[in-house]
Length: 75
Image (cartoon, rainbow, N blue to C red; front, side):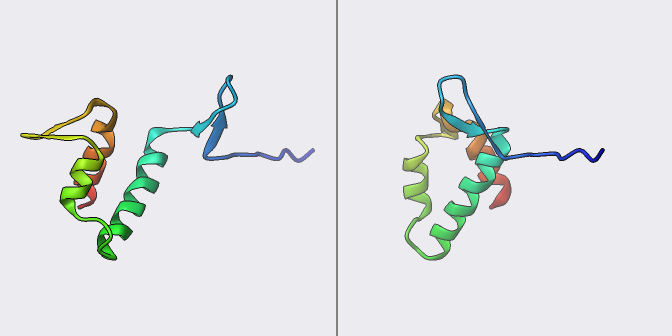
């Protein structure tokens, strides 16, 4: 008997909301979108810092620390 493996980047939480199976998927897709916006000049680094809660002196609001670190590696 052949088994079929079904997989997805998303999962459904108990409350019905969907989320990525791992934060790195979300970060990757966010970074791709941000990079394309920077390349087509609809976003610059000042707007990016304001968007993710940059507080100055290398401080980023708590909800965006992982994403900010991922973006720094990409750029």
